[in-house]
Amino acid sequence: MAYWLIKSEPSVYPWTQLQKEQQTVWSGVRNFEARNNLRAMKVGDSCLFYHSNEGKEIVGVAKVVRAAYPDPTGEEGEDWSVVDVAPAYPLVKPVGLATLKAGKTTAGMQLVTRSRLSVTRVTAPEWKAIHKLGATELPTAKKA
DNA sequence: GCCAACGTTGGC
DNA sequence: GCCAACGTTGGC
Image 1: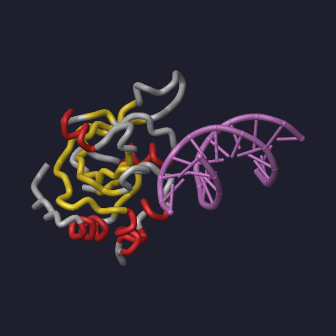
Image 2 (image 1 turned 120 degrees about the horizontal axis):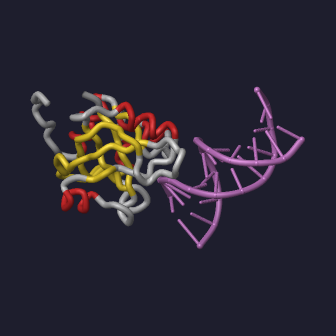
């Protein structure tokens, strides 16, 4: 069980659309490191859903429902990956970038330090801190 | 809308 | 294999 953070511009694919569709293919990642992160995801892993550019805040949590497979939107001969994600639960209070930067634990997040990477790793302490900032209870662990 | 940061590409 | 140029992302 690992934690991740995935970014999307709300004008392209907002959290509300994921809630509406209940599942989506996380396609279009064109960065090797981000791709490798996608490939490291396992079914049942959790992902913070971050709105970049507009909002600049973490709005919810999604879960991986299908592990990495080839990106159907990729060019012939290219080697990109996607995962499928589904909404898990929203944060009661969205957590903005400024808040993350101001937080002791969260200031060191890859989201902050590697701002151009669209799929980043999240540590357990960061995960906890964000739920606290988001006024959202951690879901009780249950078997996949 | 601007600009800084950074990943990627291509020339040498 | 190095490094400059270029394109893209994303915060402000």
